[in-house]
Image (cartoon, rainbow, N blue to C red; front, top):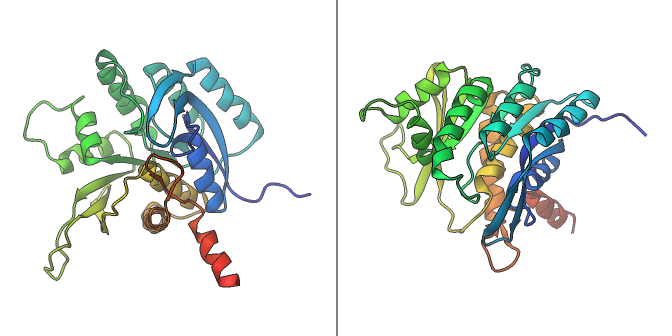
Length: 284
């Protein structure tokens, strides 16, 4: 018998029966990277590896109580917040996390697998995310499309660029912004990039920190983005700084996608324990 030695991470997100996204997926990635995950469930999904058929939101008071009870008992090395269902959940989680400013917070608030809220609620939800959770985030991760959606809650003109949108988020208090799926730039030597190549671009207070190009894998995948944000959280929980964590998490995610598995008739799910396959093969 011994006390807990691996870093503890608390993840807020949906419960997905297929384990492709949400807290089940996060806990798998945390475990694969030598961390222990705990979960606060924000929604119950009905779905498989192809589609989500229905979503049942969890009451914000239940979300808050789940977290408070765990946090009174244990000390977290990091937090991850995934896609949330409504403003009440955003407010409840923001209030909780404000009590733990020293632990890194990775915010990955969008998921293409989940249905959008009703149109009348989308802007209110995005505004709440921007005002309440983004200022607390150590790192905010979102795609170029998702950045554009979020930026619509403050843009006043059509001249805004990706860089100016990122600057706005950093000015709110977010320490780093990782934008996925940006156009891959030519190399420093002027070499062009290969077709189907995209990049993940990390920004901080001093501007662009890294621009990592990756060859697009065919897929189709579900849970790729969540795998990346969960891996970043795990590496930071283990003591890596943000640029180191992002670089290591990207390598891990590429491996998980390269070894992805199709569970049924739907899309491929990242294999978050792919490195165990390599270890087993080496032992034979």
